[in-house]
Length: 128
Image 1: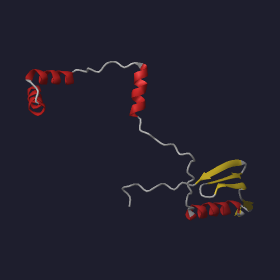
Image 2 (image 1 turned 60 degrees about the vertical axis):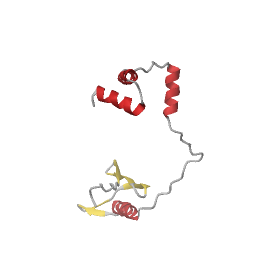
Image 3 (image 1 turned 30 degrees about the vertical axis):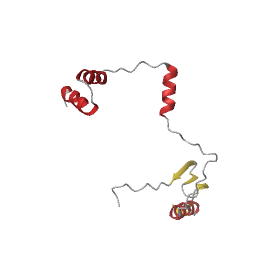
Image 4 (image 1 turned 90 degrees about the vertical axis):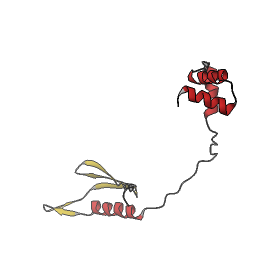
């Protein structure tokens, strides 16, 4: 829309004279906002923020137990603690600790510390 069309629209819709419509169009084209002081900027920022009520007591969200993950961690623990024969020697991991029954297990094998973390990625929206 050209400036003449906009001015004509102002005149028709707002009932302005041609001079008033031209002045209105010119004011819109220019940035007539005054520079704000630091205090005014802080007030403006506060006014733009939505009211948010903070919870007095944080929610305790209880997670549903994931039995599949629990089974896999316990199976890994069993494998690591079971004696397996390799080249005539019984081999197993030492200091097997289940840190999180659905996620993590730590152990020592041949003097080195290891940590297994089980992750279950979420399904992508394009997978179904």
